[in-house]
Length: 213
Image 1 (spheres, one colour):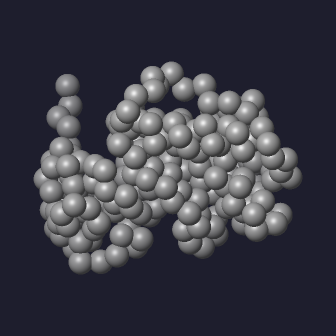
Image 2 (cartoon, rainbow, N blue to C red):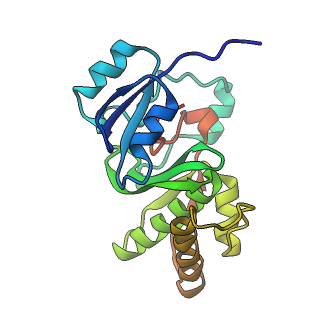
């Protein structure tokens, strides 16, 4: 069995700011802290250097990406439509601490962010991100399209429901409160926004990715 690689965790905003050498130590700093900012790094030097900088300079930074698709496949898919926003979620565990955000697809400027929440799943986060994105674009009367890399979230939005198997409890009540509001919004609102699947194999990670893999 391969040995799990060591990680170091930088916390820019949390109960305590700093670099932590275990996930549990990092988790203690971000739990129940609204707007926590954190990311893992493979070396202590990188984590300490990141702490001196800005959180937004590090999240969503993809490694150099080279598609394994053929030229013909890439030509068929084409390039992303930059008249768009992209949404994504991150969950540390499933269930685990969850958050989601939306960004401008081209500039990666953050347009909205929610969390981290004490307990959620990646699918719930992706669903909430999509509905938040729909509401955001409708509020701004925007003709931009909406990218997600989650087929599950697309299906839930289309059916106007959240089919998560996560049982409701006090810990995840804030998340399910948002889910209930999202489902109600879908049932009460019409929208013209086109939701499109992000082609990860052709374009790399979605721009809203938190970059914590």
